Length: 115
Image 1 (cartoon, rainbow, N blue to C red):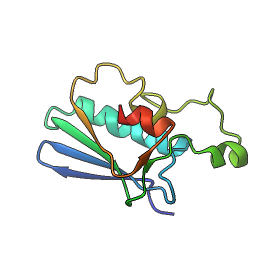
Image 2 (cartoon, rainbow, N blue to C red):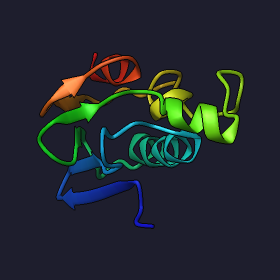
Image 3 (cartoon, rainbow, N blue to C red):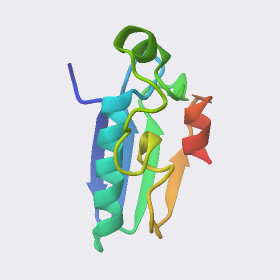
Image 4 (cartoon, rainbow, N blue to C red):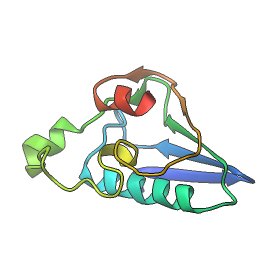
């Protein structure tokens, strides 16, 4: 299985791409990875702005992966890593802009990440 998150760096710009077909839903593993990425972004003085987007054209992100809830027993009480769900909801001291390049449907937690 490929990595659920792709990153690209271009000078001071970090691009974070959610890549979980079909709907770019975020499970616990993906959330932990995103938290680590955004923590590193926050702490790296060479990176000045992040752009988050979804792979594909139909979904930016459907939010929480409900299939993982039903099949793997994930719950809202689980530890979703640094920054909470999606790595952004509870990340302290993130004083850099994060731009959501919304390229499709953003619902549930995907909408939270977008705003």
